[in-house]
Image (cartoon, rainbow, N blue to C red; front, side):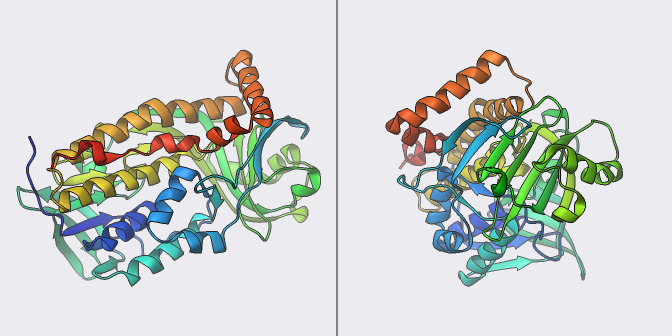
Length: 402
């Protein structure tokens, strides 16, 4: 049996989308929320952000969806193509479902979320506050923080690590190198570029499948900014990858563009990880989103899964605050979210990536293409598939004890 514990103040480590969204949700319930962030500003990288219906649900609960829609776009569809651009299969997005997909680059979402968070009562963000160690007892959790004015300690009923893949909270709980899983032996370079893919007949989201020249191209803004994520040889330095970018674009993109044919906004090499922490709860410390689990970006399940963590943790903490359960609900949070990663996020994201780089059985690909074709003919099936990410959500009402 667990015990009743107050949820009057929560510290969130990390002012990214997951931390800010959780802060908004908790503040709306009267919880005092303090966000500590190591950087001196929000992340300005316009990373792609396609919010599937399960994520849009939580954006709606936080009261930010109307602003997201006003600034974002509704992508028309996703498809798969051969390197020559020829069409293989596609899935049209649906607007006639609850919470249809919306896209808004993360840098814009973060600004929007920060504005909403700071408008709520009893909220603050402490910039240039880097957590260096943690401690806890029966009554509170504490973070020891380096600040511009020296070391300080902050305490709360609970501390939530939303501080990304290199989470200091996770490292403090389990050790610097204890993040179970693997690094895939594939290299990606994520770029943001102004280039007119539509003139080549491309849809808003496109996966080009090939053993070597695979990539993803997705429109992320109304003014023509696209996210292009492509593969390159394993084992080179970041400098070498960036030097090779013009050559790779000319080889793989439609129209074989030279640097003067497009406007490159950013380019960042990334390693691909499939990892999950051994627990998302240790006493009064909790983990969510990239601090808790990682997957490759093909299919958007990392961000979608992270927002699902936020929704579940919010439900659990509010139930505890309102006396509807004891703190064992937080163990259930950890159990449920780890299971969602193991049974859905990890295998689905792996399958998405293998499909793109032709690392799966041909029979599996053909089965998927057949499913896409069937959705064109079966409206109800298409509707169900459009809402497929809702399986990442969990109704915590069944776990309440009071």
